[in-house]
Amino acid sequence: MNETMTSLLERRSTRHYTEEPVSAEALDAILQAGLWAPTARNAQEIKIAVMSDPAQRVSFRSDFAQADGRPRFANFDYGAPVFLFLYGPKDFPYTELDSGIVVENMATAAEGLGLGTVIIGCIRDYMRSPAAKAWRDVIGMSEDDLFTIGLCIGHIAEPTKKQERKENRVLYVKT
Ligand SMILES: Cc1cc2nc3c(=O)[nH]c(=O)nc-3n(C[C@H](O)[C@H](O)[C@H](O)COP(=O)(O)O)c2cc1C
Image (tube, rainbow, N blue to C red; front, top):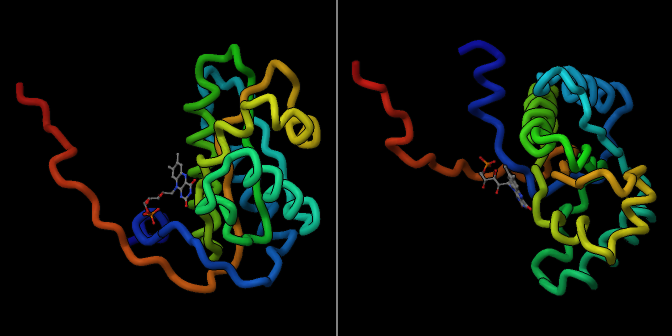
């Protein structure tokens, strides 16, 4: 198996991180992988906000937990040292799809560098709610932007068990 296939097949969502920071070089490489992702109409509209300041992260976590009210999501980012927020224009029809491609490119790049990631969707409703206006400002979003997805990045403390994939999801079209 080549390295790309290994990264794609062996990547698992990491939910236990060490405290070791992500190096600037590794983070930059991961961000480059996101920026070089294909985008519909080559629009390149997806923006990535990087939040790694621990105090800011604690504050965000607390605001989210308070607004969300689901205790199991209070530690939604699993203490990962880096968290990325992705967003793009509300009126661009591919903002969500492009974000998915950008985030997966970054997750695969991180896997190739030996780092762990987990894609985070559970903050989506909060990030789109009036309660999160101040955080949208902090991460540079305008009223015309839509939050799409988040990504945790860090060093893996505990590897995640493989989740089996459902069968019969490929259909060869008969002629
Ligand atoms: C769009 C999307 C949103 C997700 N949101 C969350 C989340 O909020 N919290 C979480 O722990 N995992 C989240 N995940 C990770 C999935 O649970 C995970 O990919 C799935 O269980 C398969 O496991 P694997 O990634 O280890 O193969 C999300 C994944 C995707 C693609």
